[in-house]
Length: 141
Image 1 (cartoon, rainbow, N blue to C red):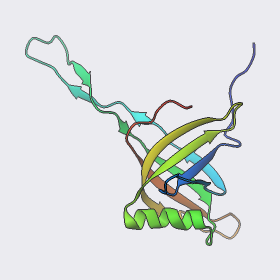
Image 2 (cartoon, rainbow, N blue to C red):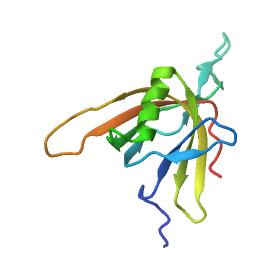
Image 3 (cartoon, rainbow, N blue to C red):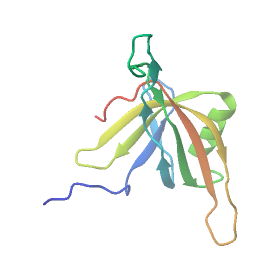
């Protein structure tokens, strides 16, 4: 049986500059991307004649995703991500899978925060960005 699974190698996250036309720049030295996606929101609609709790779909909510990178203290894209958090700017992003042809998820997100979780003498210094997805995430195109 053929195997169709893929690894994370070559996947990249790009940040839009907000211009028209918008230009996207790859965020350098990504180590991991975690929790990308959307959650279906449910509202309870149970009534007095219900035999059990009943639910309806409501507006979906984007997840809080984390992006871990090797910290590049002079990298413009990482500096701009920190600035987005400070200035409360929502940006457009693209998560690009290097399949043939490329498949891309396009979405908007806010940078909720960033941190340098651990600084040790024998490991690369990482910066971790936490992003909150805003709005819908269309299927990969």
